[in-house]
Length: 123
Length: 351
Image (cartoon, rainbow over all chains, first blue to last red; front, top):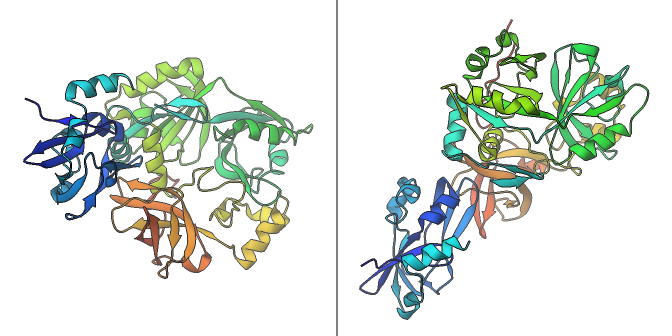
């Protein structure tokens, strides 16, 4: 079963043991183009759902990445800085940060892969 | 695709901005620059008439020579930048101006209409830019003798069997050619050039990163009606004879600024913390005081770091001055750096 969920702002999220791993969708990665820099949240930081959590800088523009759920940041993918191309080539593997969810029910309201696919068709 | 000056244009093709940028620096790229305004200035002495609006030495152009210049308003501000060349046939002038300003430019120039000047916009001409170190090799296969042109030469010649005005010029900092031809011929010629193994298409995104690395101003961003050539570091576009004669719009202000110094100066910035600083970002000194503003900024693929152009107070304009650009509320170290960020590789005349 595909446990991935998507937001309307094109983040993806995977849940395991109350921890959400977050990245950006293939659609978002294609829209951004070449990524040249990322700014990640500091572990320990508490984020509200919808708060600005990270920034992905492409040649074209800076794009804010929002926390898809509320909670405390437990990890940031520092290794990504030396392999930014992965965000374009394998966006659903290139995670950005992890959040310990304070309100797991928030994730249930996010889109499944099928729902997200339909959502993209409507854009 | 993006809308630019009323034109639908590709921001990039399949391979992406960075790849198109690096392709231009290492081999050759073809850009569609047909949105630019092209016009002929004709009449008995179009150069003398046109000089009433620009401090460039237009009368001094030799046949087949082209130069960069500025169209001025009466306050010493820059209305537009342009390339102007003297053609061999009828000694007409060939003018290329920016897309967003072209109609206003034509009206402004027509305002100078006298018996000695006629303005003939050429909306049915397309403009292709072949840019990069392999451009000469590629174009020579389709335009005999084109290698004889050196930087800022212009010729009425042929390419792939059709008539064209070809200049050895461009806005990427690389060697290259700009090919003006009938719109009806443009697609066929573009496809012929794109079929060459050295050439790939490139879009607006790469055009912008290339010109930024080359330290070249983008009109409407790095200069506008409120910017003077002295502030913009474009005094070199003012002809020596013109400086002495002071016979161009805004001459009093510009000559005063030349002697007293401008209130702000265009500089290059290197962002030392990998975070790009973009147009509109404030520039601050070590005390956090605002000393300027970024007018163009982004990531330089060849420089391999974020770079920017900014206008700063003159006391902070020296190379090596340590400033900061404010991005998302945080100051990011930015060092004033000489431009171009990447050396120009024009094919200048030797000897």
